[in-house]
Length: 173
Image (cartoon, rainbow, N blue to C red; front, side, top):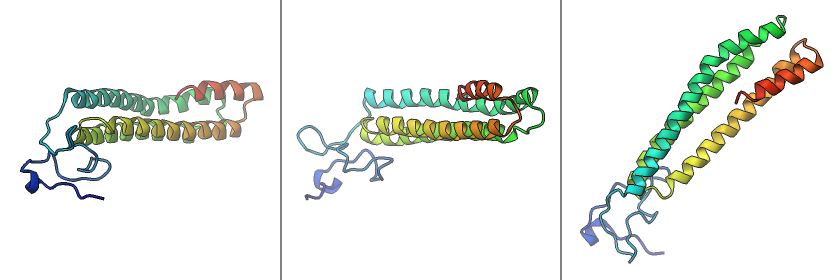
């Protein structure tokens, strides 16, 4: 395997310092042109568009997370109407946790995309962030569905009410 050409050998300055897989490295092809020569790079419009798209989507996800956090207490109070003998506080806690996970994932997505795309011009980080978003949603959905099942099954509602409430609550996320 050949070693990458250093800055001193080419006389060209790299666009950034070597990093890791999250922020890009000089081994990801970011600093080679089509002929295989190393050259100084600038951000392309595709790179900036990737950053803007991810940041806008991250803001939407963070807003949804904030709404979930606000909605958690209202949901707990609403469920007391159906069964006042059971405390649905754990369900509200699960909804708040989901909101925090969404907000955290959106911050990570924006940060990683910015630092990675400014190094490798938006080719790889965009797909990494799609993966982060899918994983965050899957974790949140699994936590939420489990919390709904556990809390509603513990209540003293009838079987029909339990089924109807589960459908409504699982649709919240």
